[in-house]
Image 1 (cartoon, chains in turn orange, red):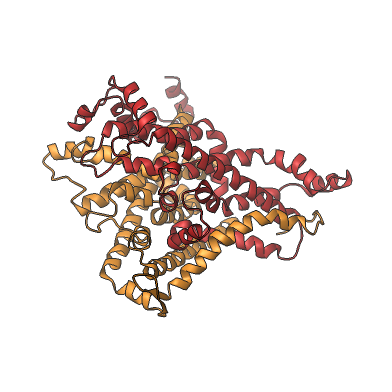
Image 2 (cartoon, chains in turn purple, brown):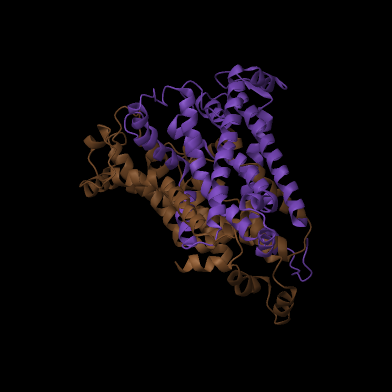
Length: 293
Length: 294
């Protein structure tokens, strides 16, 4: 889309674009290109010789049982975070959209977790679930549960899921609330006058009209669970115990920064880039359609 | 009671018409609010107790007497795991990082969006797409090579290394461009007629009109900058440029001998700035967030 009334300077637009483009090329395209290039290279342990190995880094990666586990971890984690964060947010938004007193107050009290950093969310959850000092952790132990997320992989996964979902609810809540508020009152009133019950109205009128928001949030939440939860995992479990809470991002970090395995880390970066591209594609395909909705 | 009487007139089953349903709504919403506030309450209370109380595992739910001692200890000295790295230094580094990222992103995005929206020049769409595509390349997917580039440029352990690579912003550029397309052509024509050039028009018309968008982006980007974790973890090893997010996770240590009361005080300090900004600037933030992302 281009507007009609425009300025005619020749040089100025390039100057205005220069800083953004310079950063984009140096810190985005160049490293992304390098990631692709290095994903086809194998380097010896001392970084002296490099050898082109084709798709070997990828075949090795996908033959590695650890990477299979990491993929499964990521899928379980993302699915659980998305369902929990979206379900809770939708419920709260539907309630906060009712004509009740103190609506705005509830909104204020529900949106602030948006501002809490993933790493801080993790620390807050340590104080809830730590077996020795956590409020809930100690209660579970007192109730006879063998609770220690630092030793039990399933428990560790549960805690990182809860922390990640807790942080994301407020974001989803804001979007669901905005979506609900954009549904015309007249539609709801018509349904009510026709005698449709509240649950029936929700299922047949509200939820379908909310589907663009739901779909948008689905993509956003999966992206969040994939990429923005690194801090939560690093602060809470460091991917452990064992490798129980290692996700794709965490594995790429370990192989790249800790194990200094250039080839494998680059191959993992390429896998992740493809994942982001797919998610972005889905998101924008959907936005195109939503305009006509 | 007034509500109950009103409900007779309202259509049966409509929201707000049923006092019992309203009560239930309040109960569930209050439970929701408490669910979110509980962890904050725990750290807030815990940060006012001494090491022994928390170390024993008595999770205090009421304030203690050690608030001043704990907060001044972390602010001035840090803790045992991080001797000599006061939280004030980390907070300062985080503030520098968050503010420069925020203003940097807004500045370079608004001018590049201005170029794309108000000028016609060869390569316009190509450049626009180049910026757009960065949406698909978050730092998380190019961890190692980006670190390599920053290291080749000698920017490891510098503010520049911490900040500059995060300043490009497709989201902000898209938002500004979208907004600029709604500025009426008549306004541009009128300005041209009055002899105003593009720079004058930007300063006198576009910038003031963008105030609300800038305020909204300020909140979103400040939170983004303050909460960065992976990037500072990659490019800083020196405590001089360590941000609060990196520092606080290091303060946990191996969790065997963690000084929990001090970690709690630091947690409160670390989440205060972004939470305060979101709550104080709520109006712009909510509007901006819903519009930016759509």
